Image 1 (tube, rainbow, N blue to C red):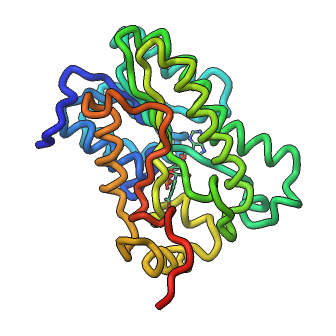
Image 2 (image 1 turned 120 degrees about the vertical axis):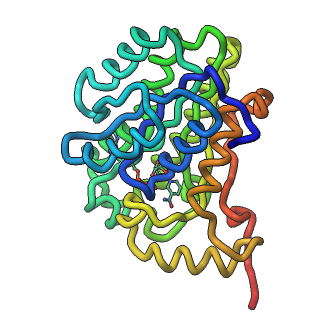
Length: 260
Ligand code: NAD
């Protein structure tokens, strides 16, 4: 059982691919705290991996959602409107870039690749906020996931750096615009965790090693720590927090030069 109570709350989780997904950890904590969940899966190929997880958290709604498919994101919110009539929180945990852009220099990123990555990894949050707003007349909590590469240059993060920077700026502007409706908007800047998305980043193991060497806690974080933070942000324990980028990274973001 969780100490934080999300009983009678309705939440949407977008971004579960498998058991390693940061969104899966969050979904488990939301559910353990009593929330009723809508879970999405990317496409038919992803469905068999996500469906058993959705069942584990008794998801009331289980729907396809590829944000690049016209109408699919809108259909998720329409289903929520029809079934629940409202929404209390959502977690946006999706990111994507073309392989050549993820592995190549930002200098060489094409306009098309840049736009695609921005549309999927950043503008989808803005679309979700717009669709959630009318369902949140009692207020709400919107959360997304970012990374330190938004703030400082992290070798091999490439195009995702500027995309996450735009995501974090969007969090602040959405928080400003939706605050008067008591809708809070925050990002969790997670430390490096081995997930499927992370496996697309070159030299990821070195990033993990570097974290252990330089982070104040001298370790990496795990998905559970990220999920627990999402639970706090969704709950009434965080009613005063909005427009924030909350680092759950064992303190890696404050590390400068560390000598061993
Ligand atoms: P993951 O691979 O489990 O999740 C990524 C998700 O993005 C998948 O569920 C995938 O289906 C979804 N996605 C990709 N394209 C999509 C589209 N067109 N429409 C809808 N969904 C789409 O990996 P993860 O690490 O749990 O990633 C979740 C979020 O956390 C991402 O935003 C990622 O950048 C962020 N993050 C990850 C780390 C890390 O080290 N793992 C650190 C900081 C931030």
